[in-house]
Image (tube, rainbow, N blue to C red):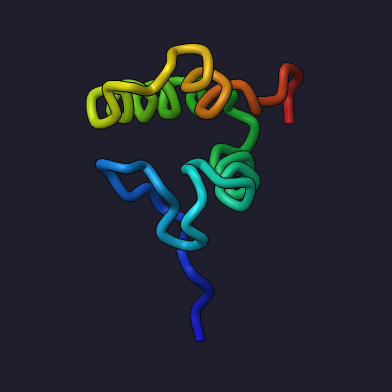
Length: 78
């Protein structure tokens, strides 16, 4: 059996794999591997996700959204 994919499910931006807020901890780990150290590219991707989530979730607070989508990124190369 294939493990669940941890994809975003708009408009609520929950994880299709575990039901938590996306990006969940599993997806965060996967993204770090998928982007292979390209922090800037990962930040751009997550920034575009943040903008889409902000459109879908108008009550989403800016600081909370920033932490959710970008705040977990490593400051140093991963």
